[in-house]
Image 1: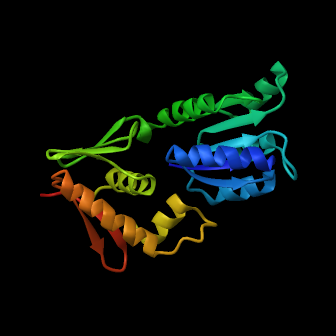
Image 2 (image 1 turned 30 degrees about the vertical axis):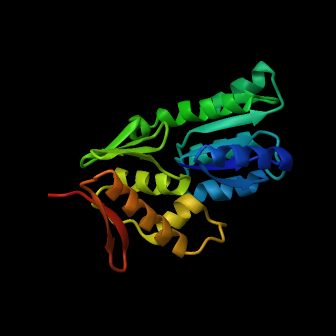
Length: 224
């Protein structure tokens, strides 16, 4: 799952990015409202965490603009303000949730999980394909021959493929969605993770396989 984090306090941003990445999110971090708007307009995010008080454009203005453009991803606002009027303005502007600083990291994670669970395509805790399941709660792949916990990027790649069975996903799309626009990762990281996923699918006795579509990408092929 890919998040945009817009927080101008670099130390806090770095800490949140590390925490979210450890929890198997892919995070793009920006430090002002204009960059936040530009990134969100480019799309491909599952959730956004926006600080209210940011340079160039505040978080509520960013929120109003994306909602006016029909961008309906879950948004959580962060702010040092705690007045009721500020919270009401944020929620009336289209925020899904609101947290005041300082806050507990575990609570932020819980609120992000709660927001994203409300998305129709993310309501199922278990994804199923053929004779295997993938748990969104603990990233475990289970099949008739056992189970195995996937690494961060492997989990996100398999989740994308299980949500789009028999549909080819390009290597560029994997890089963009999971590693992010500004990542320096090269295309071979996709190949390495595909190789790892194939071995893990085989180890649990999966009836599904990852096939390469020449010139297009990779797909999770369901048996006839």
